[in-house]
Amino acid sequence: MIKIQAIFLTFTALFFYVFTSAQENSLLWKISGNGLEKDSYLFGTLHMSCGEDFRIPEKVKTALGATDALAVEVDVTDPKNAALLQSKIAPKPHFFDSLSAEKKKAIDSALIANEIPPAIFDQVSPTVAISLLAIKGFDCPSMQDIKMMEHELKNLPESKEKPIAELESATFQIDLLDSLFSAEDLYSYLTSSMDTKAVTKNLVKAYFSENLQEIEKITMNTAFLSGPKQEQLLDTRNQAWMQKMPGMMKGKSYVFAVGAAHLVGKNGVIQLLRDSGYTVTAVSE
Image 1 (cartoon, rainbow, N blue to C red):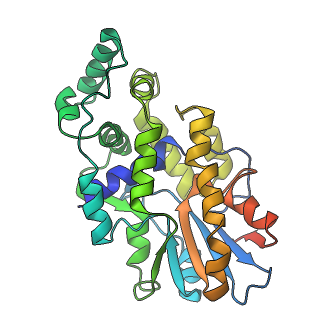
Image 2 (image 1 turned 135 degrees about the vertical axis):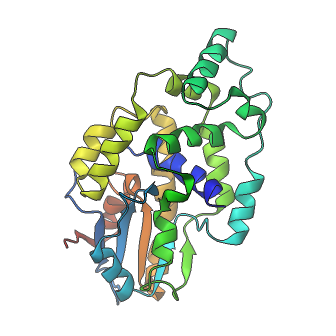
């Protein structure tokens, strides 16, 4: 089950981790004011990493202990969602029809170079295939060594008995990824000169150092989706979450754990919360 969960989380973790403006160097932000009785928190995640790199900051554990509930994008550890993810990995027979024979051959060659058989597209969806490439970029010793942030947060003593809320459905997230990702995108990614392992190593180091400026520097040139598609993946979802978060915080205090790409920029969750009247401040250790 962990393989399927990691696949879909990784798709958003690596390829769309795009920052639009420099921020204070913190992954945890306190949400207060605007009539809230208790503070809530916003935690920017890197959805997965290898065990030797992984850690959860003590300040996040403290925030979880001080709040009533944990909220994530999608709870992929929920058995219902895990079953849905499994059902969504079917191949797409006509996915490559728009590509020339030359581009198809280039994709096959790139897959073979990454020790992935081209026949994988006869077995799983393109989204799964490219996510497997992303997972290989983390260069973990094995799939069993993968640590998923949301899963680990859920199992902490500070949150183990607390309710888990979702900001969107698994169906929505998977369908969105499938709709955004084209055969041309796959070709562009596989034939680029980017050293995925080196980029991922630097990204992981910057993330766990909470160095948002360095993350911005690394990632601004690595996303391969067009601007409009990235807006759908980030900005549109941020706006949808902002329709839910104020109401949620009226009744309970939360730690909202979402991909760090969603936090920053003029359309990021931090700014949207401030625009709605909340005080949002970086939390240091």
